[in-house]
Structures are given as structure tokens and as C-alpha cells.
Length: 201
Image 1 (cartoon, one colour):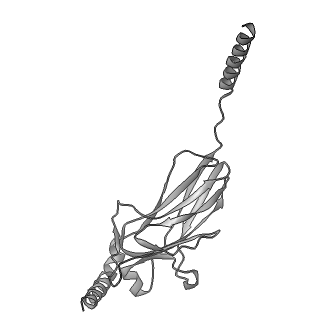
Image 2 (cartoon, rainbow, N blue to C red; image 1 turned 180 degrees about the vertical axis):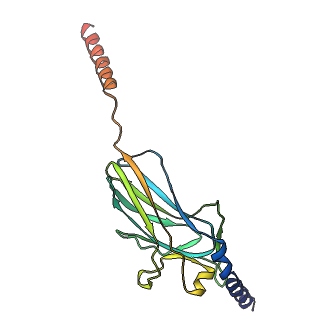
Image 3 (tube, rainbow, N blue to C red; image 1 turned 90 degrees about the vertical axis):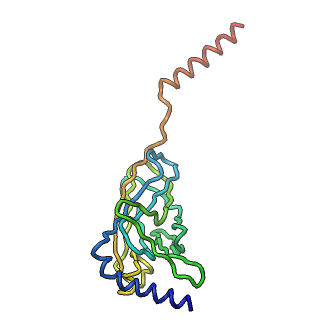
């Protein structure tokens, strides 16, 4: 009986907030890179974040990379532990998550304020060559055949639509720095001096 009461309350709250969500929230996607200086061979990660969203219950987006002057290898992703990870790890990965809840309990949607950042997922990469990596993140327009892509709220699920967002980030990678020529010459001179001293002895 308590479970049915919770369901009724949750559905009532959902319908009441349907109109207010569109007027108040303006969700935005942003990114945070794990390192500021990235060199060829380094492993780095990109956090995909969202802000200014109410009652987030599920999300899905796909990532595209490979454009730009540099190249990076995709190593997989991890979704925030508050969501069930339904991601498809492929050449063009689709990162999806659905809010989880204990058995027979209503899941609690996520609220994120205007100046707050909530990490949805972390994508991992390896820098293969120097240059600029261009990463694009997109949610589709509701094509059911592509899976759970888009940003879904408690209100949007029941009215049959979703929030579509897109964003991109450029990351610079450099060659591994080599020791300056002057240092190499000094090391060589020190070694030569020691060799000469040993010969005199």
C-alpha cells in the first residue's frame, strides 16, 4: 500500500512540474579535462557535466573524435554511480545512464543548480600524436532506434519528449619534451673529464 501511495505522489508531482520545468531550467553541457599539459602517450580523461537541470532521470549522448591535427584513442567510459550504465562502447561510443533506486522504491531524480556542475560520465583517452584533438558530444532528436539518447526529466518522460544538447572541446597535446642540447653537452663533458682523470691515475 505504501508503495502505491509513493507511486501516486510521484506521478502527481511529475505532472505538476511539467509546465514549470520548461520555464525555469536551461540545461547546459560542459567539460572538464583531467590534465592541463598533455603529451603524446599520456592517458587523460574528459568529464561530461550538466548544469541547470531539474528532475533528471536519464541521459544519453554519443561522442565523436578524430578530427583536428592530433589523434587520440578512446579507452572507454564510466557513468556516475547514481545511474545504471547502459553505454555502448564502440568506435562512436554512446554513453547512457538511467537513475537507479532500491527494489520497490521510486528513484530520486537529480536536481542541478545554475552554477553547479554534475558529472554524468567520464571518458578516457590516450594521446597518440601531437596536435589538437577535437571532441564532439551530441544527443539525438528522439530516434528510438538509436537507443536512450537525450536528456530526460521526470516531466519530459511523460510528455513524450527530451532535452537535446550538444557541445565540443579542443584539447592540445605536445611531443614529449627532450632534454636541452646544452644539458646533453654538459653531461658528455663531465663524463669525458672523469675518463681523462682515471687515465692519468
